[in-house]
Image (cartoon, rainbow, N blue to C red; front, side, top):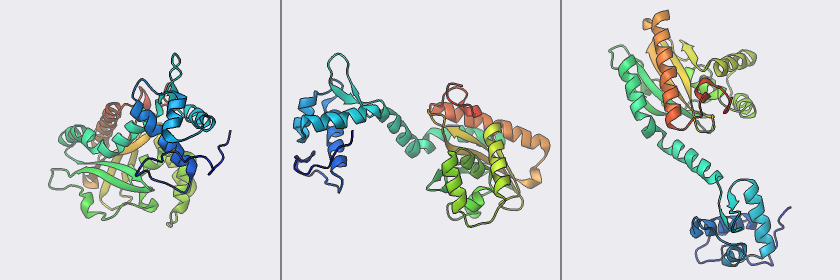
Length: 280
């Protein structure tokens, strides 16, 4: 049922200092959620909540029912009182992951750096661009130093030429991936790129052999969250002068294992690190 913007009704959230947006329904929903949060685990009844935020009971019931459908609000069966829903737990985990991923990943990255002796990178996709959350430059004299290779987040062009970029693109929903690829200005073989990204999603890793920068190779694997979604790419960069089938195999196995470990740390379901759907 649609909620009409009835300006004759008292606006929710009329307490001093409340923020008023151009959309009254958003203000009312925000006020209700803040009221539920303040009520604690015991919850709050409908009339108490609507009185507290200045809404008619019918409007409050409609808004709360819609929030229940989206998991943002739950109703205690025995008391019929309202509490914050489980969706907030998921959103909070995602928010925490996005803001603290570097701290959570630090020991995993350090272990991979020590065992591989190559450059370790943890990258995310933000607003369609790659951002390196953490970089540990390889300790060997001949190494890969991404801080000297790029001074700004990657646009879509370079994304399809790096191992981490391929992993991040492969992990996107189809619609979002198509939009991002279509927004790029560089010309590329679209069918070939989509085929390679499908292989990355299937195999659980991506490679880069002298594609972005001559003399640089990379291997990357996806890091997944509690919903099984790709939230980052863990990558090893190394000079192509050291590339041999055996060296690449060892780096690939180490990268995949470290990405799987990090995925488990951030709550990925069993099998998600292998690209399986949750519950598969």
